[in-house]
Image (cartoon, one colour):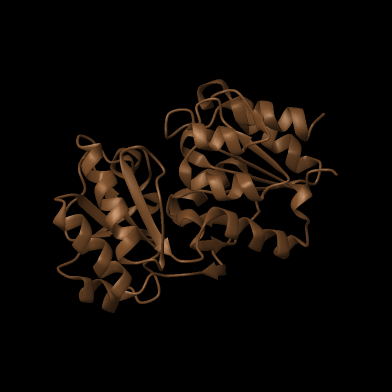
Length: 275
């Protein structure tokens, strides 16, 4: 059955260095679109950031952001929204604080945190290249209550970071899973874990898009590299793992393409869509 929807992760998949899309990837995506195929950016990043890349390619397909907690149209319309509750956020922040880990919350516009982000955070690095009206926003708040008063129904994801003590990160992740089974908890890099409300995952969001476009699973290809991509790789008719993907993703995929640094997305599209 012909592929009619391609869902593509960003970091470690579509992007070469966390910021740039190769010309080979852009060309393959545009060719697929010209043949009537829908292509959706499917990412853990916030919607406003994902939209910059989607617009850069010229896509009109809805965007899956925040690991599936939000689906937004190319003009900003809300298709699906599954925000966190105050209790879920309290469990997340108390656990990360117990282990001395840096954590923050995300909304479509950017980041909400009680502390400033480190200067090497990808959003701060990216902002150095963006125009003022494109920059990812950072809001520093004093408490969880303040965050929910300011942004009701907007807090979609929590992120916990630790670059130096990965064992501590894993311990916090496992403890939080036991503390609150109503959370989806995945990692997008080996130095983080991310929380969403139960039912929010890339796989569930792709299934929502399938209904939106009235497509069967066999008509969908998903491409990714990390744990947070696993659900959509398993859902898709054709699940594609990047050459740089973690072993768990490679074992679940039907095909392993080239690494992100070698335009593996383009190669997968050429093999399964432009053949």
